[in-house]
Image: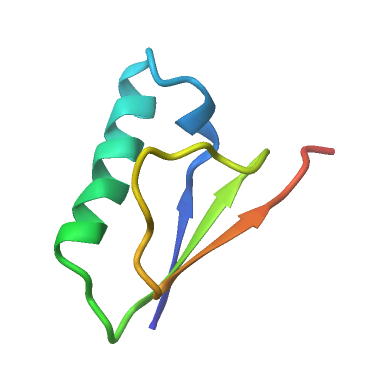
Amino acid sequence: MRIGINASFLEKPMTGIGQVTSNFLKELTLHPIESVRFIVYCQAMPVLDFDLPNNCEIKVLTPW
């Protein structure tokens, strides 16, 4: 199974959804689900203070 995550708000950490997104990704590192592949969609390569698990892939998409 693949699950896409809109992580465009990682660039705005002072917003509520930015904090939720960051904390959700941190939880994935603590409780990895190996049978699921997560695709993290961002508008720019995010700067994270943690490493994503191996089953997470970052895709940078620029807006139209």
